[in-house]
Amino acid sequence: ATAFGKPFAVVPCCTFADDFPERRLSSGQPVRTYEDILRWLQEQHAGAQVTYLPFLGKNAVIHTTPR
Image (cartoon, rainbow, N blue to C red; front, side, top):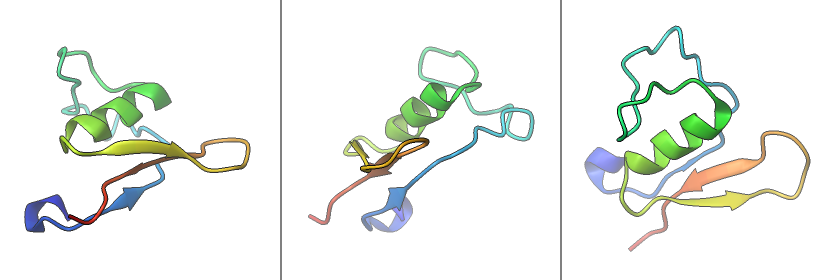
């Protein structure tokens, strides 16, 4: 979506850190935790925002809005 300038929404649940060891935060730290994956996804697109859905658990949505 970002390559084509389209809005997107992602509800991540897992980091899969061992499957994607190349994922690094802008600080150089590896993406290992749920908080890390949220931050990493936001870092991939400058306009990305976080919204929380109204239920317990992994309820963060990383998204952009149409321009």
